[in-house]
Image 1 (cartoon, rainbow, N blue to C red):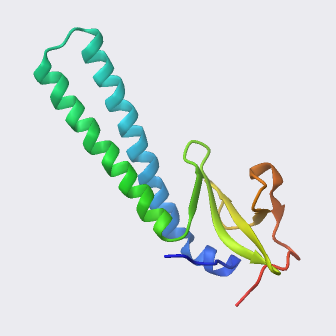
Image 2 (tube, rainbow, N blue to C red):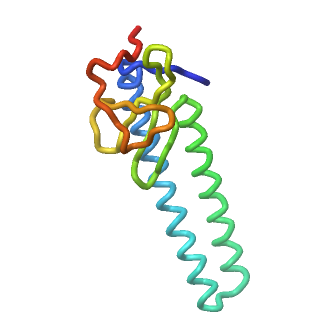
Image 3 (cartoon, rainbow, N blue to C red):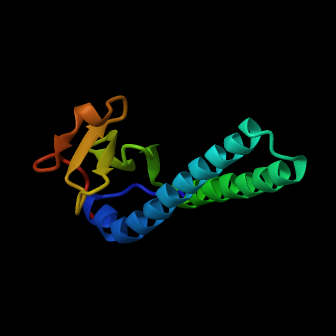
Length: 133
């Protein structure tokens, strides 16, 4: 689904987006743990059965991570960085396509930036011309 968000619609979606993003972070952390466990099996000379079971567990976790990312991005929300907790919502400022910007830990959408700008280009929403319904 493609959605153009306003600050109001983005903030309305934010509780669900936060929930979904928290699940993505948890799944990513699980993948990292499993990768470490798999590496430990390799380094310790573990047998094929232990290796294959752990590898299958890792494959399942990676698949779950990608499905979680796909579900969030199906809402029209772009994940810019899982590690930094950066998400963008497509929006319009006058006739210009822009991103409404959210960082994990923020309570609401308060910033935007141009399509070719990143987090460092964030500007406050006040008096932006971002289209409201």
